[in-house]
Image (cartoon, rainbow, N blue to C red; front, side, top):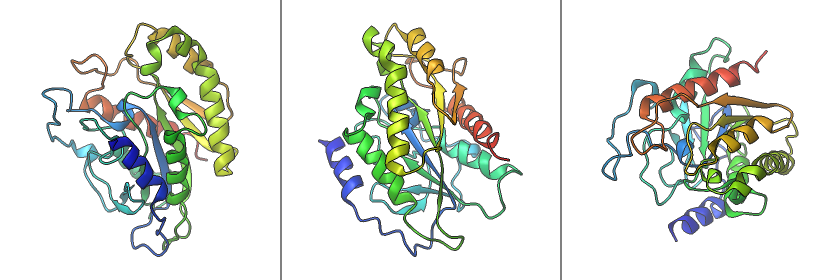
Length: 265
């Protein structure tokens, strides 16, 4: 019920972003499942420890698209109100934004807009065209670039994708992963009218089943133009053996930023 309410709100809320005092210049979609939603510091005792590392501190130059489709100053947990029904902690989004803003490749005056869309425990089949999660992601992406700020219309720069742990449970899902990922990338680009939209895919560090290696192999086999791959394997995993620690999420955000910045000329 909580997920349904969040999805309905995100899709149905008016995209009243034009003229907002807070409008980003660069927009990034954060999608996938729990390790993108963020579980850093939230894997013990059923609650988040509340620790925010300096790499994830709030900043006027880092905004978040709220569940109600309004820009607001971003802060951890970034997926609050989006990744519903789960205990949330630190994810890679904030450290990604700060790393992008620190780079000399990023134009002065840039304001990063983060659009959280991840939902824990979801297989890639739940992100295919026509599903609630797919429709929510596309609707939020459209709303994010609908407004106009002091520097003009926001630019959708990339989709950051970290998902696949659930697809390690069943062999048939692991084997179907590459094809499903390719279809999702193709459909999102078509529905957003951006045939070359950058996707940055994260290779699994862990999984919920015994077919982690099959999914990882499938991830490296995905064939699509302008799709980059960042490998999370080797990053520190929390004691639940599934989720990245806070510092691992911080490191992943920096790795994603490096992948994005490498595409700039």
